[in-house]
Image (cartoon, rainbow, N blue to C red; front, side):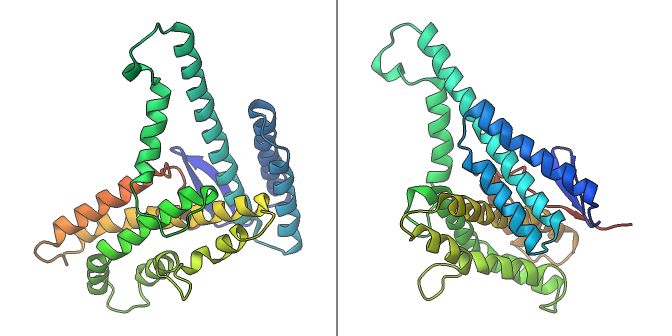
Length: 277
């Protein structure tokens, strides 16, 4: 597989990486972790954890294209988050140095308001009961998908049945399986996609390297599914199968999926598999 960036989106092509390409990609990932350590004073265990995952992937004979793609997505998001955090701190510092005394209602900085607004975008979603500070974002993201499964998916699934009469044709079975993995609760009240994360959260002492790795996996699973939905849903209008009232339902569903991607800042976490010509 080859990895590239086009229009700001990571792309994944089905072509086996050569040893030279693998080495170049791994060194690039190492450089990004070094940037995290040097520029943002992040703990060294982040880079060490990557090296451990890399060795494990080699021993397990994993597909290195998939492994490298996922690692690039993760470390790039970490760098982006740290950059945004530094920008917020710089805004606060500037306001402290240049602002005069204000009334109590005006003491909150621009950065504080922006940060609160971003948190509110996530906080408004109902969680799935994963009430742990270390899993706040995943709890809300999976809750957003649960709401989608209850409120929007039934109509979309009916339309998919008309477009793809066979359950095993088209994208229907794949999206449905992935959605239910994230949303349908098991005997313990949680979906299968959260089993490993809940196990790690229940351990004492907490293994933060494993926790971070699993949170990243959960985030990618949800993001890739949302992007697939955002690409598939608009095609319904071109299939000539929509009944009265369904056009509005499709529009509302597309808007909800797009809103979730924006609220959780997942617009760049998109997986694209390009077939070889």
